[in-house]
Length: 208
Image (cartoon, rainbow, N blue to C red; front, side):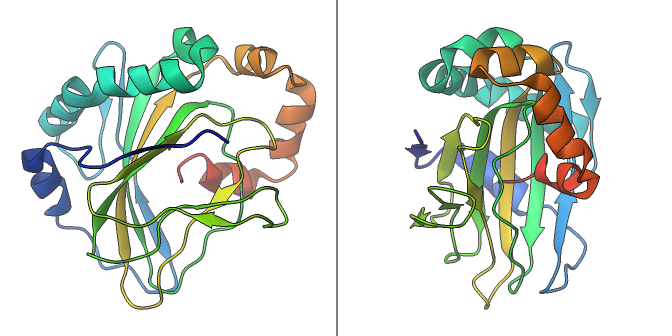
């Protein structure tokens, strides 16, 4: 799996503002996802960000994200439809299952926000959890990859001490059939995989 790590991904002003957003308290055994998205026409859907801030984030980082997608999976660049800027708070004792991301994610990204120390994204060789490789947690470190069906296995968890706050920045598409065509995978089998477990699909599409 090709993984790109970029330190100091956010401008300092954006990092401070996004890290200072007041959120509801999250239990140490739970996870909370705050959904924010913006499409190609700058239409926004926000839960914890203002439309103005979301527009600024999109303006500041969209070109950088597209460049990353161009490097990691150039065939998918033309499928871009919208971006997600989700804020995820992970409880200190919470662990998310190993997964490979849903096909509507063209570029999967996470920027670690706080605290000073925690557990970064955990990548694996397979779904069984073999070949574990943990990305070191560092504030304002961005970690990016382009998903591939049954290949880009990863998970995340708290460190048992403090809740984990991160910005999940994804480039997304609505053209799922074309994704499977590029990946040379079966669209029908891929969709069946998620439909038989809608709980997994509901949550896996928002995380990294």
